[in-house]
Structures are given as C-alpha cells and as structure tokens.
Length: 232
Image (cartoon, rainbow, N blue to C red; front, side, top):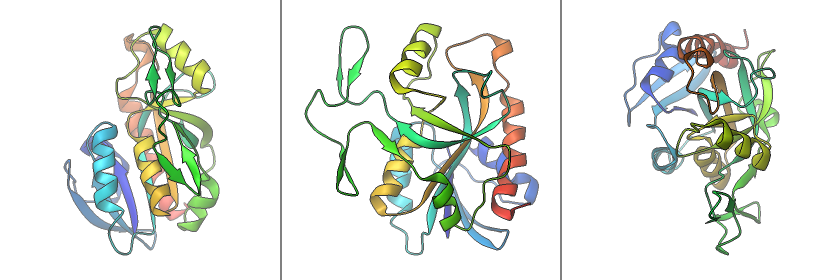
C-alpha cells in the first residue's frame, strides 16, 4: 500500500478525480487502486505541523510500502521551472530550524540539537533524497518531462523578492512548498521510500497576478499523477 499525501482536498481531487478517486477531506483517507497499485489517499492539511501529524499516523500503518507527496509549489526561477511544469525533489531543506539572527538568517546547528538521525547520521535542516530509486522501489516510473529540483519547506509563504533571493541563495533552492520536509523526514525515519512531486503554481516572492497560475498547476497535477502510477 502506497501512502499518497496532499495538503488540500483540491490538490487530491485535481490529481485523481479524473480517474475516479473518491473525494477526501482534510484528516481523512480513502483506499484507491490505480495501475494495479493499492493506494491510500490522505489529505494532511497545510503546513509542517499537519504534515508531521499525518506522517506519524499513516506511516505506522501495517502494510505501508512507501510515501508519495503530491501538490503545487512555487519556483524561484520560472525560466528553469515554468508555471505548470512538474518537478520532483532530490533534496529537502527546512530553513527555519535552528538559531535565528537579527537579519533573518538561521544557523541549523546554532542551538546544538539535531532533529534526529537518519541512517546513523544527524539531521539538522536538510535531507538528501533518492527519488528515482525510491520511485522504482514503489513500482513507479517518473514520466518524461518531470524536472529535478532542490526543494525548500517553509511555514510562511515567501512574500517578497528579497526573502526569495535569500532562500534561493542560502538553500540552493528551486521549489518552495509547505509540507515536504516533514513527510520526507517521517518516511526516512520509518525506513520507507519517498517521492515528492510538485507542479509549479507561482513565482516565489511575487504577489503579482501574472506570476501565479493555480488553475494551470492543478490541471498539470491531474495530468501527471495518473501517469506516475499507470506508466502511461
């Protein structure tokens, strides 16, 4: 059973509604089969706290074979990751963990406590993922045209170009989201394969209407998700 998690019901419905999946509300789950694979669809709610709570609840279930996190996210450079394109994560960073200075920078080792360990190594604010192999372990194959990117998980959506520039530089960031680090960390701690894919909905740091296309990103998610599980 593959655990498939989105932050919102709208993302889940966009991803799987077109292939007959039942509606799932926040905090709920639904069993669904696609491409010969048994899925448990779950809607976590937005943000790292909701994602962590969902991770703890779902990953303890017997028979869990892996975790797939789907959703929308912002790109720091749409010249590389255009609106409506799909990107999978090879790295996740949570830039808000650690010691915060007066300029808004965070030293992940500044308080002297790692968040935990994965594979015998301490986890501070960054996880290196193995998306292609983990997808294959779950019986999935990433469709052509899906780009590879470094992801950043934030608690507050970046609202200024200045903050976006700092995050991009400090974290070598490509895509911003609000749940991925928590789900990735939970999966790695549980020894489960993990895959995160986002369709690009906006330019990080911009509030201009022309730099956002939520509807287009949700349509792209609906095109991508069935292909991920069926191989078609």
